[in-house]
Image: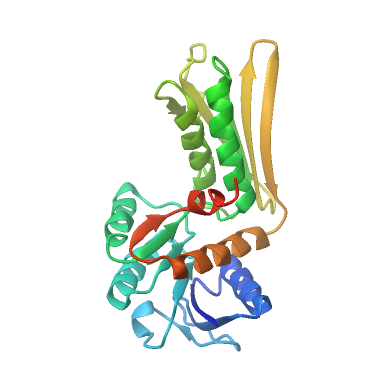
Length: 253
């Protein structure tokens, strides 16, 4: 049995992760973490990782950036691999993740969907092939999402940048820009409304033709399933390191 801890277990994604783990058959949730410590009938819920003294093979986090310091401290001290699926980390927090990954395996991704990460690989190839095309990214999410642009939109922008022959500038809004679009720009637009789970579109616009690559998440289960896939991967790696969905997708395409 894979022994799993869930950080943010009472949140929207945490509950979906718990359900996916229950349905897996070979996964045991040993505990969950929630700031309020609200009880869950299937497993104990603790207010912080420091309060856990049991056994665990891996921790899956869908909480908030504020929880990161305690999670990194716990992972390093207890040698428990971490799957970090939370978005909105600052540059300093990202650096802290990289530092901790030198001592414990960490899997970090702004989007745990297998489909989105296949899309990223396609975006890199398209950017390299479509010389002179303008690149625009549009992301749509539910009205409760706090960060904008989404972590996935930034991942897609980086994927495009890897295929371009120049270093692009990211442009997040054009209201204050009174000039023609620069050829080195990647435009990133955010939409918030309703209960949209997640929708990302990458547009390559050239002279007299355009190509659109798009991914739509129909439910949160795609992210939970991806996180569990990452947990299985991470529990089997030989030692410390910083991993991402690219390591999983590389096994497929």
